[in-house]
Image (tube, rainbow, N blue to C red):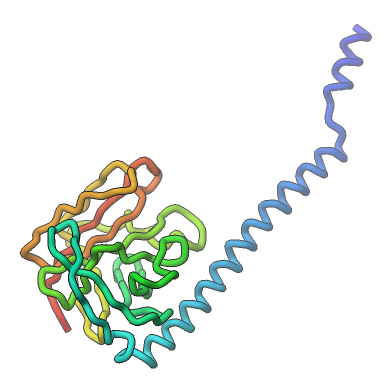
Length: 218
């Protein structure tokens, strides 16, 4: 009986140890919350500055020359963009209150680690039957720009502002594929389209693709 009491006594964690562990966990949680808060504020400030540059230099930014390269639709088309580190256009999705600028393909900031990313092989919406492909992170954290795309349904609207023109699209198809680093884009090649790609909500093994077709230019 005495031995059992001694063993029970040894197994107990002192109140001081519990307090230290609790304090550590709370401090760690607070650090991550603060980091995300600061990152979010920094991104909003950076976004605001880029929008001012975009509005000021709109004509110059959209002065781009397009030549051709091989793409997935077997057309030749490539970009010779000016090296301007500011947005060349905006993607807006009213249903989820999303609005974000995007950079030209040649920009170092055109990556899902810094922003939404225009995928190589894309064409801007001013090209007939083009396909603008944009990818972004989902999940949580400051760079999860496409975290609410899962709320979209067929028929919802997306707007691309490019060269001072609003291109309005409606989603016509939503499908999933294995997250292998590549994606098959199933679209109507007789339509000007917008393709959005992100990881599927709560399933990192698949990605969700949203196909939208142009219906209005303003």
